[in-house]
Structure formats: structure tokens, C-alpha cells
Length: 69
Image (tube, rainbow, N blue to C red):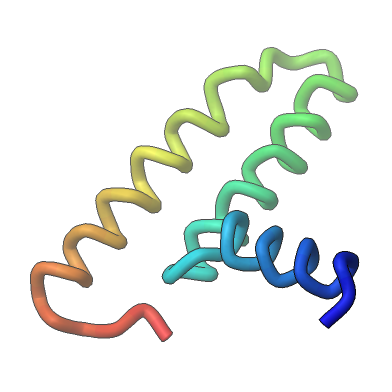
């Protein structure tokens, strides 16, 4: 396996990990925060709220034994 492929697999495991929905939520939150800032509003508060919400949802699903996939 080439070094580039190995790095790609590492990056995928690091960013996506076990729960792809958390990764997507964070990306969407950062994008929405950027749109808010571009429109002249304060957008710094949105990513932390989404992270707290998505981690809470992930923990809730994990304790219920329901896979995120």
C-alpha cells in the first residue's frame, strides 16, 4: 500500500471514526456558521451547540445499543 493510500485511510478513520453522522453534523454546522458570519450575524455559537447535540445523540444511541450506521 502506498504512503498516500495509508494516509487517506488514517484521515478517514480520524475524521469519520465510528459515527459518520457526527462528522457530517460538524461540517454542516461550520458551513452554516460561515454563512451567518457572511450575512453579518454572529455565528460562533452554532458549532459548539451542534457538537454538544451530536455527541449527546451519539451517546444516547450508544447506550441504547443502536448502531449509528
